[in-house]
Image 1 (cartoon, one colour):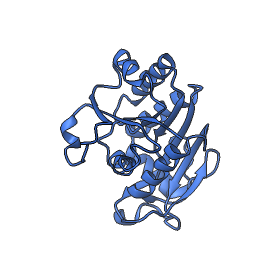
Image 2: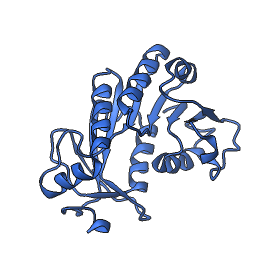
Image 3: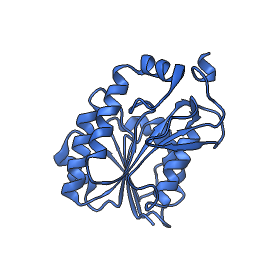
Length: 219
């Protein structure tokens, strides 16, 4: 059971789905939900009227401020993006150490280990380019952090109204080419609800039977 949840990058497409689901748990398994964003106006489409929902405007590279925000949190879910993802991860890990928070769920990307075989692996590398390097840099920081982390490596997102996914673990070839945002959000919520699961794991997630050279919507 988790009481205080902090979401970094709460305006992300996956994070918003997670927030909507967690709102119904406030007052039960969740006591407080803190949403960190750089641009709070991007959360305008969410009903955040619950007094136990706290929106904080900050940049995760401001480690000193992040320590203040993290103090008293039970779990951190990071849904971050950018060319400086490695630096963002370093700041998050440093703040967690200083605030004595250990549980971390981190969204990475498929391909950070070169774990995708064949044509799709080549396509993914070409499409992501330096972005994949940034995700790989952050992944290394998280894995070296000694935090109770779970890394999630999604295939390419699509918006089908479904929860349908399969998982691979680090060391296994990645399966599939796409996955619904709802599926990734469902996995995140499951880990928030059961925070003792998948600790120290790097999990690939994709929709079953979507193998190919690229996601269906790109072919």
